[in-house]
Length: 379
Image (cartoon, rainbow, N blue to C red; front, side, top):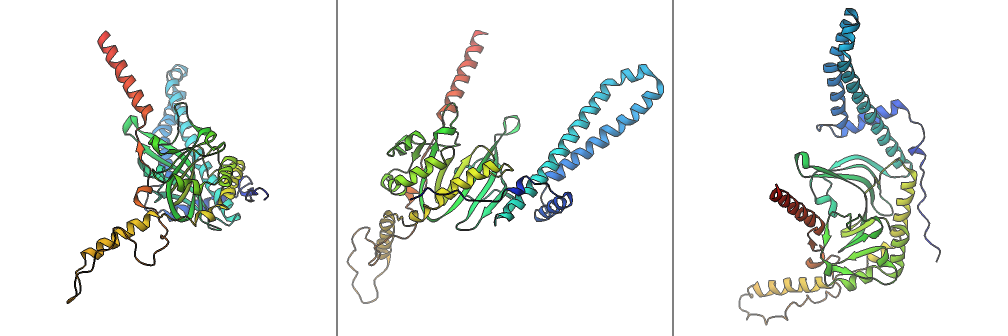
């Protein structure tokens, strides 16, 4: 069987010249869609206007007065002129960044249209079940490029904030979300090629007993976690040909399967003006998506036990019909007659991995506390 070919796409919209009027019209359309919320462009415009009114206008007046009174006064005003120039530089940089972002979003919208996809500028608190989408506050996904055939795929940039005040941190991710046919057990592939100095760069860690070793070279590229008791199910899903697809096309991407979604995570922007990044991500999705059809056949036999328990409990609780003796109790946890195949879904114990604390953070805190105590003792 020949190797899968990467998805072809038209990348001209990412680099070709743009019309300024078309960019302005697109920005107005995006603003109208998000009417009622504070826009980044509005904030930047206000900042630039405040700098101009409160700094530049008085400085220009002082400069004219100084030039009229002589050289000594001009030398005395040099520090204020320097401050004015710095303020002007900040305003120009903010305005340039604002215009650059407008052009970037316009290019991405045209790129999406050229490739039979759709574009969404921003979604606050996106309702996705992946591990990065449930953390922190001020959660938002931006520059979303979505494909709808042969299955739903979303490329986006995401950020959230943790901490508060001076200790707040904004975490940024690029992601690809692929809709699957059926819910699957929560499985994580932690890519070893993108790990940080102290281990995984993922925002969560998992109990070691959930780690599963697969055959071949797979463990050289990924650490696989699956819920306890679902080892055989993971082996069913990750057949040798699928493992090869992940190694060849997604070795630098962290992967999470949760509910009926598959997520690819990266610490760089996924929705970008870089054609090479799009070629990489399109190639990865194109190689994997052809194998997802066989995942649609997976069923969780544990659901028969769950539904059989519910059915037996309902039988036991139901009063017998008038004039009839109570029915003999059914076998414990027996499924209803005719239910030979469980429906699509995952039993409760397989829906989420068990998480553990981040030991590196704990060690850092302990070392810091010991150092602080030792310093206080010596002083």
